Every structure is written in structure tokens, then in C-alpha cells.
Image 1 (cartoon, protein in one colour):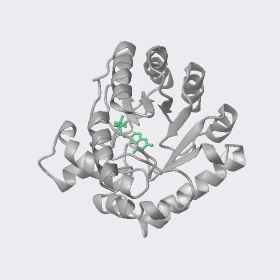
Image 2: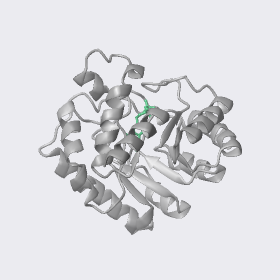
Image 3: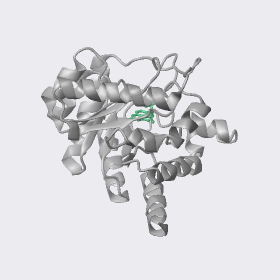
Image 4: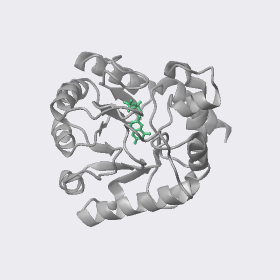
Length: 258
Ligand code: HH2
């Protein structure tokens, strides 16, 4: 899954994709590089970020989705916590709702059921503004599994079809390095819930915590690929990445070695 951020403030690529034409250009490139899905986002959820106003988020993502749709046939996901944005994105051609809030927002479950789209339910402890202040768990893998299970059950009870549900442990969302590493080791247990797993660690801060020389997010390609390969070995169905070409190449080589 290739990331297309239309945000001025995303942690790694804020402001890089400046509008619909640039989004379509990036989408075509990612399609040629081997992406299977594209995830369009108009609100940063990096640690310390503030929510984007709805009108702003819509103005960022809708023209971009239309421009991407016009040039590229790949299925599109919308990365949003707002039901209104998800609804508008589906009307514009997206077919997946990637919600870092796991459909916890007001009316989100009902909207997802009504839209009939794929949903990604992601685990986050706290809110982006403060989630990295002091993340705490007794048993991070167990707590993430219990949360994802509860959200999947709630989605199904609201009418979301089981086969449309994906789950994601939410690397870096209210987690220390130790928590993230424990989740990587626990991916097999999370997969045992029976839903396909999405995994996103591309360019994230855990790589800098391991390698202090990787201060800039753009300097974290090696770590991003190492994490994507480990996730794929553990059975993850989809890795969410900024660097599609390099990740696809690494995954192909790993598959050939198996
Ligand atoms: N990570 C980010 C955003 N959305 N969605 C899922 N399902 N899983 C993730 O790990 C995930 C996500 C954060 O990364 P990015 O979009 O690059 O940054 P920002 O939130 O600053 O726009």
C-alpha cells in the first residue's frame, strides 16, 4: 500500500505532494512500482499533531482522489477518522476506509456498514497530540489483540461484513520502541484473530530510536525495509509504505529466497 499524504505537516513527507496533479503523478509512479493499494490522507496523525478541520481535509483529499482516479486504476483507501470524509471519498471512488481510530468516532461504525467498504481498524493508545508522552501497557500484545477483536466485533455487529475487515497493530501510535518490537514479535498471534493484517512502520520514529543517525525520516529506508520484510515473514497481508519500489523489490527477493 503506497502512501499519498496531502498534508502540509505529515512527519515524513508533509507538503511534498502539493495538490491533485502531484498526487496523480505519485499514484501512477507507485502503480508502476508495484503497489496494490494507494492510501490517500489529508490529516496528519503524527505524534503531537492536531486534528485537521473537516473542510480542510475534504479540500485536500477530494480533488486528489478524483485526479488519481482519472489516471490510475489501483484501488484507493482513504486515511481518515471522520465519517463525513470517508463518505465523500467513497463517492469519489475510494473503496477502503483506513481509520487510525478503529471506527471509534461518532457514527463511524454505522457509516462504514452503510458504505459497504473495506475497513482498516487500527490500534492507538490515546490521541495523536499526547500519545507518545507516556504509553503504558501491562501486556501490549494481549491488549492490542483484545482491542482489535472488540472493534472487529463492534464493526460486524453494526453490519460491516467480516471479509471486509483488516486490522493493524498501529506501530508508533502510543507505543515505545519496546512496545513496537513486542508487537512485531506478536504479529502471528494478532493474525490468529482471523483478519488480514495491515502493518505500517515506514520511516517511523522507532527506526531513529534504534539508529540515532537516522534523524531525518527520509533517511530511514533501510530500517523501513527491514521492518516490512519482518512483517511479511510474520504473515502480514499488506505493508503501508512511502517507498514502494524499494519495498516491492525487497519483498520479491525475500519471496524468491523462501
Ligand atoms: N500510520 C500513519 C498513518 N496512518 N494507518 C494505518 N493503518 N497504519 C499505520 O501505521 C498508519 C496509518 C502515520 O504515517 P504517515 O501517514 O506517513 O504520517 P502522518 O500521520 O504524519 O501523515
